[in-house]
Image (cartoon, rainbow, N blue to C red):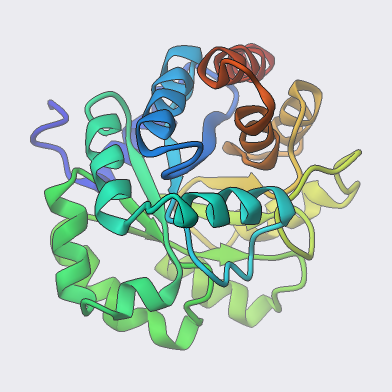
Length: 266
């Protein structure tokens, strides 16, 4: 089945199943940073380096889940004039190579209405959507709209999510279940929590979709450790955004980093 005839949910499933790695690799990209075209170049470098999917962030003025590195990148993208339309265009172009999962805060989704926002995702080839500040209780209406269009609504769970709530989230998960490795915001950590294996096992027991882990993974060794702990997918964010901010040639730098992460997962 070609990517043109697959739904977004099917593309995500195929990416996890066909990664050729112990865990699928999903780098995070801040749309519009260091510029709109620069972010596209970084995303292309992710694909060149061996990424299986891309998480594409929409810059937002109050990003409650983001640590300082990603927050600063989003602030600079907004200051440079990046818009949702710009980010979706980056996603459209990247979607020609690999599945794109958009990460957007709830205000951006509620603004045009669920159907209007979902139609924008489909028109730009976006396979999935993460809304980190959308409560479980408000997910059903958006889930229905996205299901009708074959777009995955990817929920998040944390180490502190109670069992009953975790079960309800896992049952509704589409594409994959995003498991946060630590309590707190995104950012690089010195080491992964020793309890990660238990967190991943709890999450996996609630759902039929792959379980991916993010927040705090910044080295090839940590990526390999996440796979060892049972992750079906590994999400890398702040380390790559920092590299794009600091390097003279952001695309070359992130390609090398992603390649090292991919090698660690093979």
